[in-house]
Length: 421
Image (cartoon, rainbow, N blue to C red):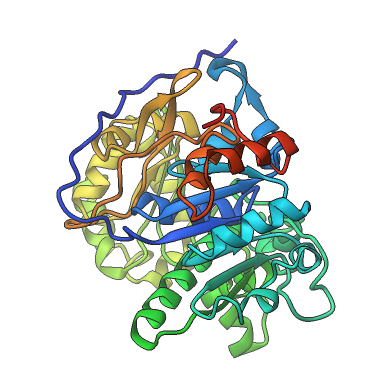
């Protein structure tokens, strides 16, 4: 049975300056992945994120893939919901709907990722709110967008990866499309939502109006095709699948070492001479007529690979990585996820650490990759228990005294795991 790895607990740090998004309040109805990842990024930089969850169960991912080593908490949920407050509201009740409207009245941004009909049926879609809240920024994340014949259709990263050709690009030659190891369409959709919200906040600061921001998984996947997709637009030819062999340079690809595999590619002509001289110590290959130019090396790829493969088997991944990096040749030691998270480089970059958790002591976190010199990300707070912040947040709203909140709790329109006021 695997043992959970542990990492240093990150101590709270004094904020050296203002928080980048201090004073921005986000009412976040999103759940599962793309929406929560977007709001987590905003929360990391100081926005107040109020996560609205149904009192019965909350975000679907709270109960997915529970991990016994961390008190049966869901690692899926923990990965996407730090730096947020959890407020449990049933907005399908009249009382809960009014609470939500009162929260939105204090908000800068609403974020949601339901199918189109859900928020419209609840009277919480942008068209229902824009006249009442003209400065509100409303960000909608969906599978296929809010217009068109698939506007009411649910969708996942995996399906959209297949229908946009993204999965095909990850296949080996002659094989069926392969789903990537990461939900990159979900993650880049989240980034697009984050960018859209930040752009809308800047536009409001300059021009004084709110607006509707939309990003869809399908649109994101088409945009993510980028230069590979442009190859088809420019030529009419399907782009090559990447496979295992490098498409941009030679020599390159996967090579067995004494303790594993390394990947590298001499993508530019200027890399070949230092590779021969300083990495594999075979300077005579520089002037070998079979290998003088990239075209020559590609034409004689089998001879090139057969020459260097035995050399790499003589030493470790780390040895060759050091030489390749010193010679200016891009490379990577082929690692498992666990090896990468536990590596010295990850530790040097302080990208994995633990933070306190209210019920299980501490939980691991993968850090925020955006570094800011004057307004860094805030100290990460573990994802809140369902409804942990309901009373605190409502008590800050005008007209919500202890008696009113108590009535809402007793009536079931809202719920709290922190007791009553």
